[in-house]
Image 1 (cartoon, rainbow, N blue to C red):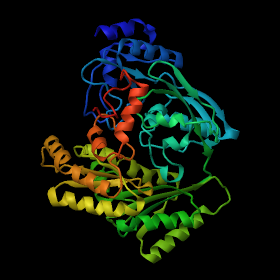
Image 2 (image 1 turned 180 degrees about the vertical axis):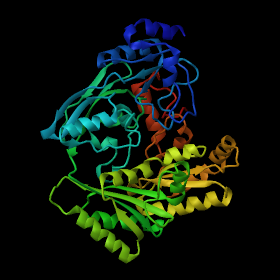
Image 3 (image 1 turned 180 degrees about the horizontal axis):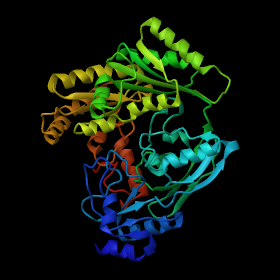
Image 4 (image 1 turned 90 degrees about the vertical axis):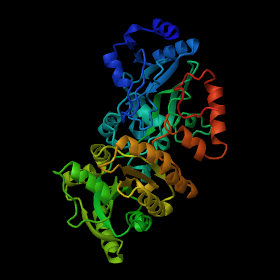
Length: 471
């Protein structure tokens, strides 16, 4: 621990927090499945202080764990239990540096909460399209470090697709800064992409320039009962064509997921009178105040009814009803927690193969653990489905989860792999998916990642033990 003491002695005491009552909030992961330890949390106020921290850690070979809002599902922002790492929180670096409305861009510190950044864009009569269930607490630096997805990927892409420029403190304390919000910049390697999705293992993101879009003037939201999950791809295609590519969200909800939520919150009601095995939450939006978007959606629903793709549906008649629809979708994870938690599978396959994946994976679960409850939902407009399994009420939950992850989950991942899919659509790797990356990562990818890690961080001080599997 002498090395940590030397680091702390070199830093301004105003940025060092050692009170363990406070520190403990930074050492337990979001899902409360892993608890680490650290002597101190460092909370720098500016880029220069981040550089000073990194230089001190590099000189003393002390590991550093960057943390945004601590909402990672994969323990990416949690220190180890060895107590030989320090946590660096960017929460004090929360300033919007510039909004260039004419350029549709925003430049900001990395520690700002996502919802606050969304509000800053809205105040400029624009919109930041990145939207997540955790947006009231997650921070933009963490969103970029995990390449967050969310509900608008089908229209606007993932977090990396919104990045115009980046500022990063490298493992030796030097600064890479290319923040100019240019749409076109073909001057050599696109270096910023190295740090997007790297979960803090190659450097600490301290600033970013992001794309904004025109604020939506019309939004139409529909809750639909679909006859069978096999129709989701054709339904999405028709929705995109009918609305002129205005689909922003296309979310799937299984009835078993909805039932878990209704059981945990009896005050909630089904949005449709008759139950169905499958639902889609469809949202379309446009910046135009004159296009007849609601008319297009009404015509779409009439065509879907006529073709038999949907059996029931309703369009939100008010902002409150729209919020109620989204409340159902966004609170499914909380319902799983209420029922004892779940074994999570963050799967992505081609949209055209998604229904087949769900059907095959469901058969595997039902053949082996008949009493378990499947909770299947997700951003199926971009091929991402959360295929979660809730233990039976009578089961030893911890034992069930361990056995399922060891015996059944590999079969689910095998199906996704055979279909050209991935085991990590939007959650990242962190600590808990290292073996999965080794088993299912693209050929040569892990070795290339190790090469990059060794080149940029030879002392392995940046979020050690995460993302890059050991040799």
